[in-house]
Image (cartoon, rainbow, N blue to C red; front, side, top):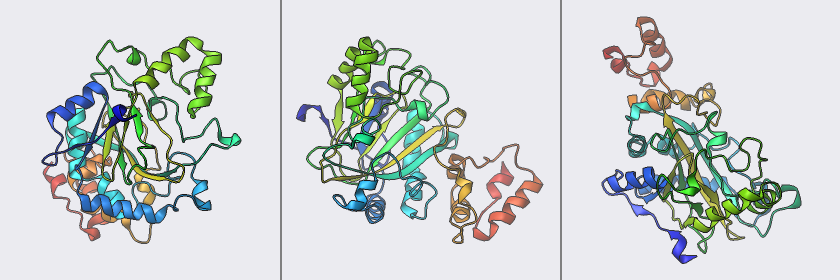
Length: 342
């Protein structure tokens, strides 16, 4: 296992290096640390640890699948989650990977969740179990289409690890792309459970048994993906940046471990076929604490763009809409000047 483990590379100067950007574009992922302030990461990790039950407790057994179920998604009462989702360092990194401006990014996922180790899946959950995942790509439940050719990426997915690995277990495994003729990345990328007529099966064992029985020619081909996988060994603050068309999977945690992660996705503004995975940001309006209104009012122009707020110069802006938006957000500190100058 040791020779297949990946350790995070530090980010120097709060920005991805040219080599790190090239690795993401060519290999399909890059594993880094120190992109976000340590204090912010630790604050978010502490909040996540307080929200989710400790491992090896009865309450922990309720968390067997992906996601927070809407409990810890953007925008959140947990301030650190919002700060990470819109942090300037992170947005600049996403923009660099996609070769666009920050204003041309859109947030489409921000979800903080827990995964718990256990001895085995129950019979009822064997097919959908999330502990030892099958090798897959993520695009089917993010986009209505297929990702474009490799050199035209549309989105960046990210896992921010908020706990340390236990016994080198539970790290995400990725398959590095080795060039345009890599047989593992043959076009189109459709040989994964849940795509087309293939049945959705999340757990590795049942998924590969299904292929062996129903698609034996794919079963042998898929084995090369597992043979080539490399697994990250993570610490708090490490970040795996990857793509919708990167082969990867979740690996089993130690039975008594809990893994806390923040999953985020950013897409190009024009790629409207990539869905937002949660309820719309505006759904958080009407809260007594006015959390959404304060967030919008105090965000930078670029941060607002990432949420889909009209940019300066947009056809949306006119004398009437400027006055109306000021009436909604002005008491929270909203400054309409950039939109008047646009």
